[in-house]
Length: 291
Ligand SMILES: [Zn+2]
Image (tube, rainbow, N blue to C red; front, side, top):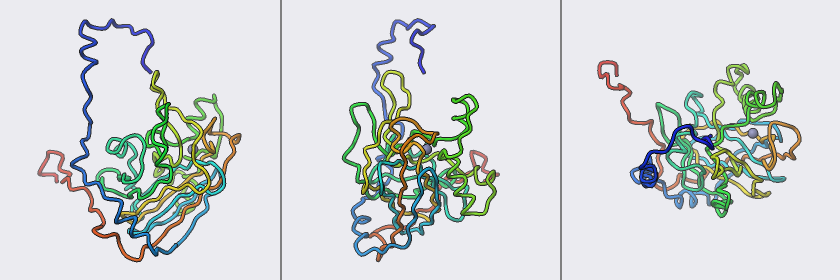
């Protein structure tokens, strides 16, 4: 956090320096942004291929073939979910929360893509519908579906609680779910768990101190976030022990509910859609002889 009483005096031109307008880091006008309409049209007549009920304070993995849709639905009571995505055939290719944030902003909605890690850096999933898109940003600067948080984890909990041991943080839930799904050991699986899309979670940064905050999620039963798989995906979803994240997480005190994941196969591919190729950078990093 920035100090309330800086140790260094402001220079004479401080106000001039601060008054310079910001520029967008990544002008995304050059980035092809898919039109959601053909994807939404492709939902007509789709058939449900599978469903997975993620128990409260636990996680499950699910598979989504490319060209299929998946929906995460609040079914029982206000509940947030922590979502990991991997390429189905390569766990090292995984969702890159930080770059997705840099490209699309702090909170995602319809039309945004979930990007993969280096070196593939390509869209893994397109958000095709968001029943909470009406929420926008509230008066506190809060919004839903963030890529600014990480995932609740037992290590941070241990630090902040002076040695506490809690085993149902989203990090541990996702680790167990991935181990169960793949047959990896817990230490092996843990290395593949990564920063998440915080589905339904309402978060922001305080205006005065810039601290990460959460507040009671506006999600209600029936609300959903829907995705189109751009590549073959393995997903992991944890029903966070924070429930609606109105008070705390990393404990068993919050009221928690399950989340439903459904996978749908469309009758035909959305018009104009083709699976995205891996990123085109040649990976020579300035040394052509080692490309
Ligand atoms: Zn969590």
